[in-house]
Image (tube, rainbow, N blue to C red; front, side, top):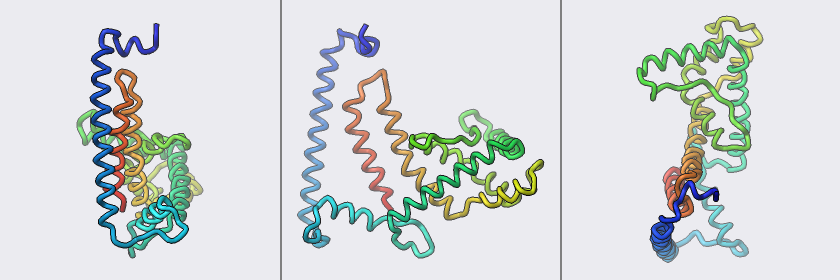
Length: 235
């Protein structure tokens, strides 16, 4: 039996072909409209011309990087390389926080008890949140889930790191380490921003990983929606 036989019946192939042709026509029409909009935007542009010897693609990248900012007191532009370094260092710290909480019975039980109290206040199974999770570094989708759980535990972690004496069973060294792992307000802002960037990719991957429906035509619309989402949150 072919691996596709449980997904598409032979009797439905004609109908599927018609559906595919219709989807392709719509995709081509949208691409044509996109090209027209791009041409109109280029005609209206007055200034921001590429430097001599610099390609159009490189110029576009420079424009995107020049608008990259991070919420701060001065709201000044942030060098993209420095931003990547900050994200890398922050993710190292976040993983240390999660490992510390999960690897010590005192902190793990404290967090689980606090989350149980919060879940009971929610009153529904849909509103319940699990414990902290680690990610697989080479899989961004798991990193998004790590950040999502971390944000859900924000108040608990802040309170635990600020007052480690409230966690019974910790040694003085463990309390000192817990204070050192405290996440600052600025770091929480960067965590929120990073989660917002990764979330569309998680949703897109989920849509395109379906096994019981065709995904080739869907990929075009997913790509367009991701562009719109990233452009709307560019700042």
